[in-house]
Picture 1 (tube, rainbow, N blue to C red):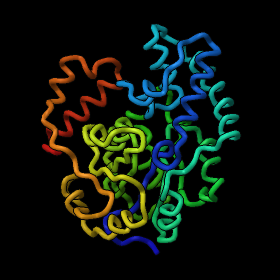
Picture 2 (spheres, helix red, strand yellow; picture 1 turned 30 degrees about the horizontal axis):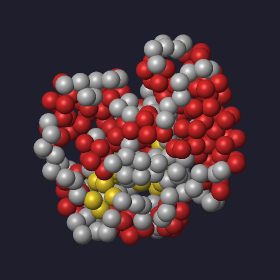
Picture 3 (cartoon, rainbow, N blue to C red; picture 1 turned 90 degrees about the horizontal axis):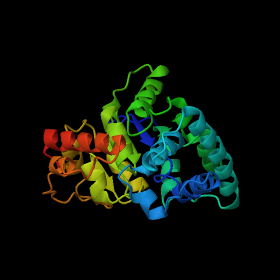
Length: 300
């Protein structure tokens, strides 16, 4: 049955939210880098970088990483590296398919059974995402996928373009026009949270790859430990659109798996001025968005 509450559609990132594919992407990146004589990147540096590599699509990763190594790559070189990485990722995925996170398949089937509109906004290629979904027969669960090839090079997350496109697609064939804040999307990285928030969506953080505090600081309205049917059952029961992320969190007080933010006494703008967040354009955009969000809402 179609939902009658506040939420009209639910969105999901793929890697790091639905599927544990980031280690495979990391390995594929390193195979390409090594082949071209470029320093590889250790897993911890890849996962915890100031540049938030986990949120970037392939094009933006190669562009940002090569710049960090002192190279200003041409668009043609980056496109060629992406093509190589596509083939390597496909081979690695066949030999060791990335697993869905616990509870994800059950949750998606539950939501599909309730008739909720579902969509996917990913930094991966469409064929990569579909290969995951087909393993669990989930491809028909999603109304559409916004994949990396759907946005212009250099315009992926943390910029709002992927989610602006998702909003456009939600309204293409819908008699009742949706606002972005009629939707809640799940993301696992600061860049994903920033992208969704800049496009006007409610953003729920899943700390599968990133500490919860980093997701709060990026502007998440909500952070939960995992995706579960019981969580979405409670979300879908909320009738009125919350006035803010804080109001949404208050609606979910006591729900299992919902995390509350620590009181953050560190002044993010002061950190940025000291240079902690100024190592790349991506990091600066995330820091600015987090500072603006926290100062506007005084939350957390």
